[in-house]
Amino acid sequence: MLLLPSVAQAQTEEKAGIISGNDIGAMVLALFAVLVVIVVLASLLKRFNLKFQGTSGMKVLSSVSLGTKERLVIVEVGGQKLLLGVTQQRIDCLKELPGDINLEGKEEQ
Image (cartoon, rainbow, N blue to C red; front, side, top):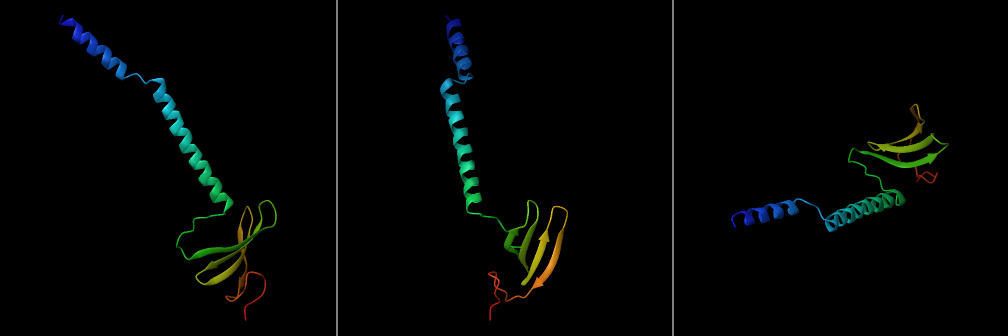
């Protein structure tokens, strides 16, 4: 009689350590939900062209692709606007732009 409770207790402890099929299904479903949220957020960031820019005082105002790895970029640094040529190997400052220049190509008066 003393042996029966200890055997039942051992079987209960053994069953508690086993993961059931319902638990595995819930974990897979939760993992899938997290992955869906990550993909949705990444696609929204890409679609709306949201970029995280710090408060370093530097902003990219405009960018134009000239080829697969070449770009013209207008940046503002400390109130000064610069036209940069960006390639795979280097970045060159092509011209300092006037502060009152409009990005549509016409200067403000």
